[in-house]
Length: 379
Ligand SMILES: Cc1ncc(COP(=O)(O)O)c(C=O)c1O
Image 1: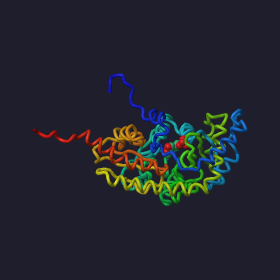
Image 2: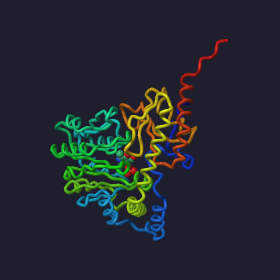
Image 3: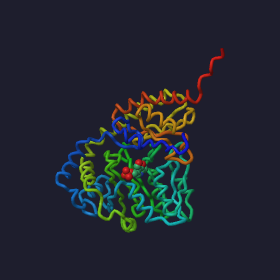
Image 4: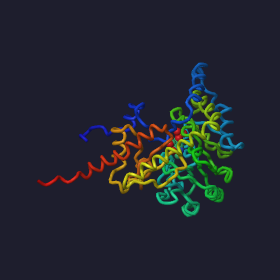
């Protein structure tokens, strides 16, 4: 790269070519029936709802839908601009300098960054080995007098591993016994056949962070939130910065999508199962690559490249620029193992997955040849 030249910005490139890209880099969902959302937003637009502020505490019907969707009738619902805002708010509210949070590596590191902004630190248990998730024993062993919180992301981004009910229960009981906050991030909970919320096992200690970005395919509308019981909910909500409420259009879309989800989601889940099967077939043909977790319980997993002779960054760039297929290099998701894998999400139409199927073997081969050119033939 020429001195002073700007680094390649994959996201800028991908957004500039949005309609030509198979977007498999952010666990977004491109399968949820679009008309549901389009009708709701069109109605809110026609009523000019955007001219007024939203009802600041959040649409009461949407809150009822969130409670019903989670099956938690006795929680208070906070609606935020994506689950991200809820995550920031709760780390800000509940953590102080010197505190520790038991977490994992790999993980969704944005939460770790929020923990650090509050002056606390994460204790990252290495989970890049079977069973590719936390276990209650390891969580228990990591607890010190400084521990304030356990981060339970289930299913887990980026590995796609999910937690069996007995492990959720055991981790929740640890939180209860040690008076720790249990942050149960359930952003991907609709993708497995069965999912267990931690809340019923530790109702006073659990904050559940939910989102409609991935299940309902509304990532661009930025809507999610948290649920908890009081007094925990009120301790967190004091830190709400979005005092005038979350976009009326997003709330209208989320309401319609949650109403449609029970009927619409099984077909989405089915397609993600078929898609990950197709990706597995392709990965099996490329020497040196494998899937640590299969089947994924989410809408993504990692493709391990340790023995492939290519770097995740080079592969991300090659796939994007030459094939219009956007995957995410692992360094964004793991300090320790990020150089070993690339993450693929697959809640996409089959045509995107076929594009990947054609591109992946060719991209790996191209990079291998560039790294190890065939010996020049001596004349
Ligand atoms: C584990 C996890 N939590 C939260 C989020 C944030 O989602 P949202 O779009 O609701 O802000 C993501 C996004 O990828 C995620 O992977």
